[in-house]
Image (cartoon, rainbow, N blue to C red):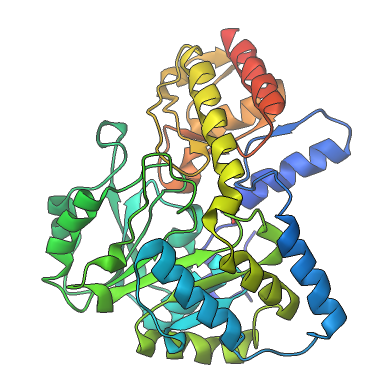
Length: 397
Ligand code: GLU
C-alpha cells in the first residue's frame, strides 16, 4: 500500500530490481540456502594492492576532512590525464566532478538538466536505474527498443525518429549493462551524424565498463568534435577496479553542467568520501595493464557461460562484446509448466530458478525487456559451472 504522505515523485518509481534480487539472495544465504548469486554486477576480485595501500596511507596521513565539492584537485587532474590517456578526451579540471558512485553522477546530471515532462531517450535494454531516475526527476523516458538481431544496438534512423522538440537528453552505456553490447567507432559516428543536427540534446555516455571490452578498444562518443560539447562522459572505479563499495564515480562534462553538478552536490552530499578519493588517485594513475588479469578472466568466463548456455534448450543468446553479463532470451519457456505452475514471463522464470535451482538472476523486465534474463558472470568459474548446471537441470523437468 502506498503511503499518501510520500511525494508523487517517489510513488511513481520502483525499487532497484538488481539490488532487490541480490538482497533476496543474501537473505536466503543467511538462512542457510546454498544460493549462487548471478544477479549483481559486482566483480568478485579484490581491489589491486596498490590501491588498498593508498587508502591506508590516506588514513595515516590524516585525510579525514571534507574535500572540495567536486573532488580533490589532484584527483581531478589525474582524471583529466586518464580521459586523455584511455579515451582521447580532452577535459580540464573545471569540467570534472567526482561523486559518490556513478549513480550519484547520473542523478546530478539529470537534476541539472531535466524539467517536468522533458523527454529522455533511452535505448532498451537499458540499465535499470536510468529509467527510474528519469521518472524521479518527473521527466518522461522515451524508449527505443532493440533486439538480439541488431546485437541490441540502435540505428541512426531509430534515434532520429525518437527525437521531438521536448528531447533533452539521451542516455546509453557502451559496453552495455545488461546486454554487453559495444558500439564500434563507425556505429557511434553514424549516431553522431544525427546528434550534430540537434545541438540542444545532451548525451550521457555511461562508460563504466570501458575496460571490460573484448572486441578491441572501447570508443567514447565524446571524441567526435562536432558534438563534444554535448557529451557528458561517465565513469567510475566500481567495475574496473572491483571497488563497488568505495563509491567513486566521476564525469567529464561541459563546464556549465559540471558547475551545476557541483552546486547540487554541495547541497546534498558535500563531497565523495575523502579516503576513497585518495585511493582513486592511485587507481587512475596506474596503467590499465595493471587490471588486465581481471579482463582476461572475465573473457574466459564469458566464453564458458556462452558454451554452457547454448547447451540449455530454450535459451537463445548472442555473443556479448563487453561488460560481464549475458542476456539470453527465454521466451521459449513461457506457457510451459514447471513445478505445477505455468511460467508466463521472465519475472516468473527468474523466481522459479531462484526457488528450484537456487540461482539468483535478474529478470529482463528490470531492463525494459520482458523476454530475457540477465546473468552476471562476475563470479568464480566454479560457481558459474555449478549455477548453469543447476539451471539446466531445473528446466529439463
Ligand atoms: N550496476 C550493477 C548492476 O547492474 C550494480 C547494482 C546496481 O547498482 O544496479 O548489477
